[in-house]
Length: 162
Image (tube, rainbow, N blue to C red):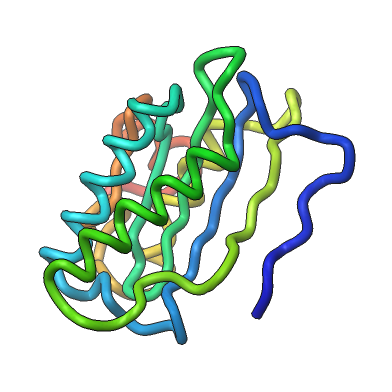
């Protein structure tokens, strides 16, 4: 699988929101390991801060990452942010075990102004529940949101309390 095409004429710089998916190399379930998922989360949050992004929602599934990030500044560069996150997390991964972490490229969707950020975040955080990796929405160790509580997102998706 090669690189997904980027939007022609769009520079991916500025205060935009992005739904990002990055798959592990050959769909290896690296993030089924708690330590690997924690270390990758640390790199995602660190890189977000360093590159002027907010990690509104993220979820490390066993073999891929879903994240909703938004630029906080006029110079927030999504392509540079994503490249640096992949580089940092891959370097950290290789310091602990052999094996390539990420596949080449990634998939993104630029959210429009009328897209519902909260519902998108809720969708991302609901992935482990829908996949049967946990018994209740939000009851999965490798997800988070810098903007919403799990309860706000549960209500947004109209999921009954557990």
